Image: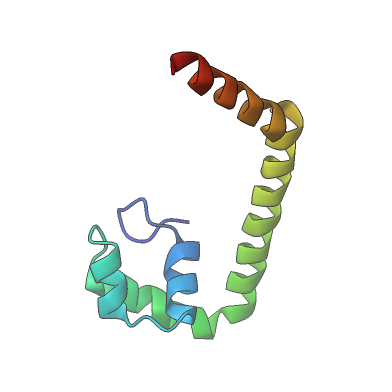
Length: 91
């Protein structure tokens, strides 16, 4: 879910809010947001907290699954080794 007509996700706004940022600080950090949209998002959250928490958990689970798939497809250690070798050959 995106906030307003931006690419900023609900996850980002809620987590930033939970970390103590005010609506104004959130808009400062993400200038594409409108203050009214941030206030709407923040006021939506307490009234639908369980739904939002379920959604956020699903997103976190999806991200973890994708991360594991990518790590299985692209061995991070092998990639690191290739990058080190490439940088040594450039020297």
